[in-house]
Length: 176
Image (spheres, rainbow, N blue to C red):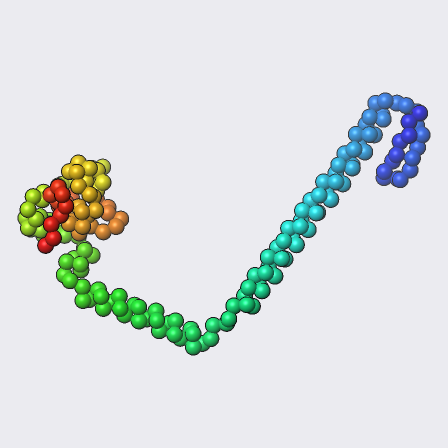
């Protein structure tokens, strides 16, 4: 005889020993218990996450409450400082020397050749497909940034096939 506990009815019964029936009942009982434990564990995880979230929110609110509120006067001062900074940038741009202003646009081929003639030992390079400033610099053993500066290139330094570049003499570019 085997004692079988039926969880759904809450009763214990004495039944004759039928091994295959008993195994099925035991497997069902184990599956039921495991299912309950899985639900309990998932519920516990959700509760822990909720508590952690609530703690984080309360700390965030405490931090916000501890910070001084920005007054309208502070906002006006901040806006005034930003506008003054913009005016300063504009003034610098307008008062900049001609060669700094020229960096904003690429040189025409004639301007490029004229500029190269003013630098003793410089060369003109025609960009081939697949070349970059770095590979051209490596070819002539000069820093690619010098080539970009002399040729009035600005980031992102996109080159196209047939474009002319000034190659400074080895040892650095001379100043105009």
